[in-house]
Image 1 (cartoon, one colour):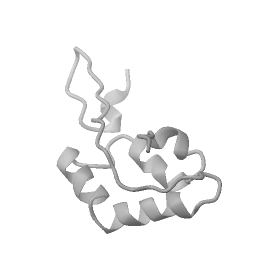
Image 2 (image 1 turned 120 degrees about the horizontal axis):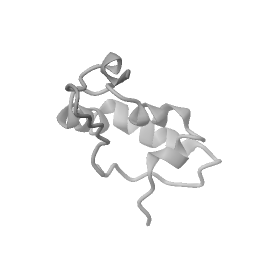
Image 3 (image 1 turned 90 degrees about the vertical axis):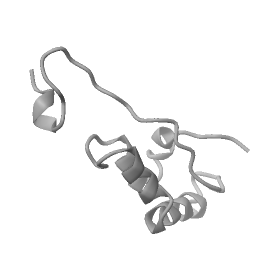
Image 4 (image 1 turned 120 degrees about the vertical axis):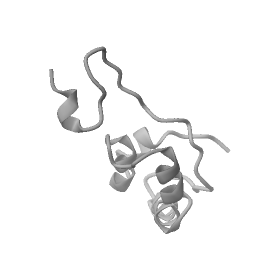
Length: 83
């Protein structure tokens, strides 16, 4: 049993890369609702069914989210990242 990040597995199961994109989820509760629901179940199956992963995906573990900080303004959209 191992805890594996979606980053490396995303190179094999492309759909997992959604977790590496900014502003896909409204907040962490929204992300948890997605991974604990039908979509999360479908993604676990894609990991397990892909022969390249050689993994059996049992569930999700929230390791937190990435944050971006600056001293100029709040970052709420991708447009706010410019400059």
